[in-house]
Image (tube, rainbow, N blue to C red; front, top):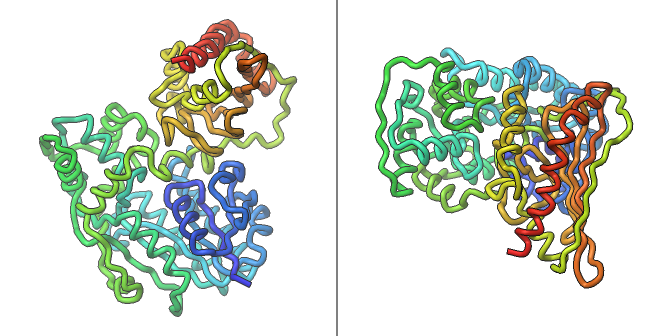
Length: 477
């Protein structure tokens, strides 16, 4: 019987890619997720998916049962609140549960940075998590990887480089753009994370890993521009605080508003490999930054996984606890068309992202902007693929909750709302054509939820009516 491996963070950028590679190698996997339904499209029948939350110790007990190796790939940087305290609590829970369950090995991915120097709060937290795991997981071997910038289409750092370089022909560059790092290609990072399963080593070692080159963010942006055939000028300035830089970042690339300051603070710290242990033990020859950027560009803008997809699937998910919901409110509309179900559903599947919402796009953008202002995900995340969806995919401020090809699509809202909301489309063949049924569901949380629904009902009436007609018009085109 194959040893059972527990994987956390499988809805994230690195964990999602690691899941596929472990499955390809026939590893027996159990995924622990706050929202298991988001993983259903990504797992094989042999992979187990169970509900669990690292912030809740009791929920980890079942997840750890029978596990020999556990990957710890979660963090709270993208969430609201004190991420350092959340990470401390999560790591202590995970270490304690692993110890009680008799887990043999924990594999943790943290961040590079010299602990003798002043580190950013984020990098301090990443290294503190490793220490907590070693202290709380009594009897469990902890193998900690420390990495710098991860280069790959969909990664946080690379997409920031892409966004800034694509949009700004002239950049005012503060000091953090000139800080040295040792970026690693996503393929090399995954190689380490897979190969460590077969590595035999004593104690609780820390593996510092990086690519073949030491470069700065400025070097990365120059190389990206060169490979894309763009001419870019960078004007260095001596002083620009992380706070001011984060405001500038939010203005130019709103998608990074929430993590902007934390990312820039970390980018201000050198992240270089000093310990050669990993290079000697793993015998992996990582590629350089030029090849890594080339591969990331080649993968395109619809990558296998994206950093923002896990924002509400994990630490940002709305936990309703014991909230009581009133009677469900429904807005349903139907329309018949002579088109085939396949034609209609094709238009339904393209909803959101660059396609938009077929009617009143400014209203949808305004709603997303209002959500962003109160700390929500807003409409910034777009979608992974402009033509196809799968369960768990992000579509702006929605997430695909159910999908039956050429029949049904249900989107769950991840907005800040006084209740829970869904938007569902059902396609049914009838009388030589197709009925398209569009239904908005809302479970109000108390009186505030009712006020919200009825206040916005006139707007919803016209927007949802226009959306239905817009889908059919697009299907004809």
